[in-house]
Length: 267
Image 1 (cartoon, rainbow, N blue to C red):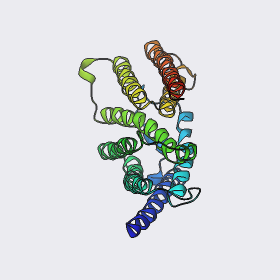
Image 2 (tube, one colour):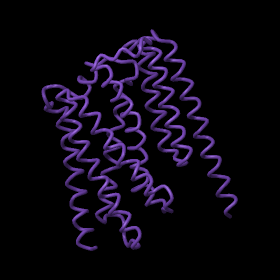
Image 3 (cartoon, rainbow, N blue to C red):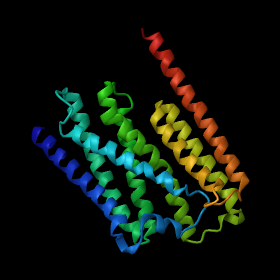
Image 4 (cartoon, one colour):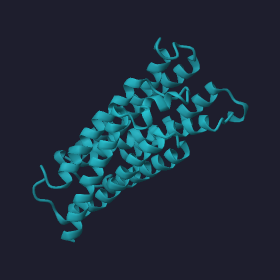
């Protein structure tokens, strides 16, 4: 067990650093002489958020760096056996997601959109499994910050990123949407994303996850109302985004209220 735990720690660090370096180089070099955003812009659609929205990656990588350091023992102190086993399981899944993340960058920058779709689904599945491992565990405030929070934020963003990637895939193959307009399909996609996110956040009572979804939808809204974006050309999409954000805020309030009641009842 001890040797396996040490090996997993090494793999977690190596795969995280690989993911981080690849993502940094993707826009510094850039890979294949295009930035990540330029690839996205080459497949125009109404679901893509404003560029500012992607700044959340900085927070995600910072939190994942914190998890990685915590995983190898920094800030952790003594842990119980069940926590060590939990770290090992999370570490394996996180490493797989990190490899898939790095591979996704190359597939995206080389316009291999179907492959990028497959890889982002791998990341999503890993995060779903990590969520299942942590959802019913009791964490201290420190453990929540280093374990639960990083993956809640990451999971929330990848939920939206998967939908966005699927949208780009459909654009790339020239899908005509069964004769329905792009606006109609964008409204449908926004509604589906909202439904998936709301069910997930309420089921898991995950406020952080919900905040990321709100951030993403706010980014979509910003692009639609900004003069640098669609400049209010699509009022139906704007109305759907605004409605989704308001309902998500109500869902967040519900989660927070239910948590407060639980604390009172458990006293």
